[in-house]
Length: 111
Length: 117
Image (cartoon, rainbow over all chains, first blue to last red; front, side, top):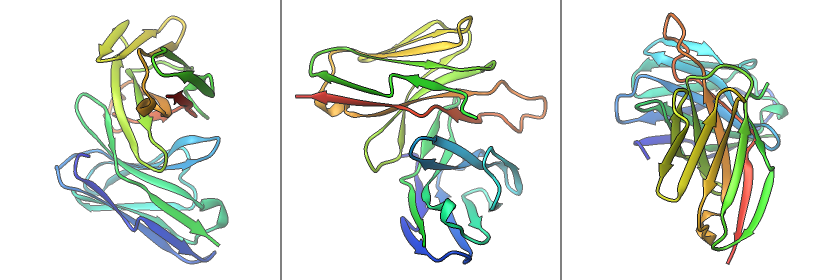
């Protein structure tokens, strides 16, 4: 599983509250990714990081921000959660020669 | 927008039969990958095929890539009930000059495979 953990694994929150999801890796990988998975949409990239403090937007970045202050942790923040952000969130790291290894996911429900 | 589109959306077969899933994409790629996802779990990488390769094997898996048609297929031979899962193709963008988009994947919506014992 490439040493990837996500926390929390499940969360229920109210509309308008901020939420932070954490991805932690133990193998010093440079590239990390956040995806969301919704029925009918597959996985969509939210943000990714190509190094400490180096991040960029994916295809569905509105309403999300990320931070990476150290190699092992990549945080995803929903600044003001909305019902449309109810989803399953996956973190991934990039291995060699280019495959990705995924964490177990976080199921987020926004009520 | 989705880069990869899988076909069929769902496939139901008997144990021992072969399962074939197809993936089409729209733009140039560096490589194409296939992933498997069991219900409620994260994705697991199965196989990667580079844009200059045409066929690749791994155990009971065979992947082909036709860059002229922008399509790929995943064949699972002698399927087992344990192969029941969703299968996704994902395309990796070509390297950009700064290297920042290196490794970004775009996923299709997946094929749900059910293998009956």
